[in-house]
Amino acid sequence: MSDVILLEGIQIPVRLGVTAAERRVRRPVRLDLEAARDLRAAGVSDRIQQTVHYKRIFEVVEEVALKHEHRLVEALADRIAKAILGNFEVDRVTVTVRKPTPISGVLEYCGVRITRNRDDLL
Image (cartoon, rainbow, N blue to C red; front, top):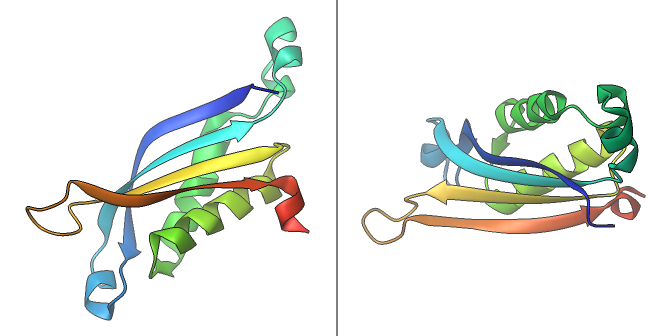
């Protein structure tokens, strides 16, 4: 299946960093998310009940990002992926997290891209 629901360019201020000093201040991260699901029924019916509402996905992403301090972008991405799989009928989710200018003047972004399947919740 190649159907995906896309949310790209999400910006959320999070407490993220290895040191306590980094985590004291919320700084924006950029998130992209792909949630795989068969969308044929939604395409035919044109009804929101046949898909996953992207606003609801955004709300879960925002809740996870704001609820905790995160030392690693890997941990943030994994928490988001598990929350999406746990809350929505999707088969697979890919989460990309980018931390802007982690090293001043040297690097535009650092980050990770992870993919988790429904089986990963078991």
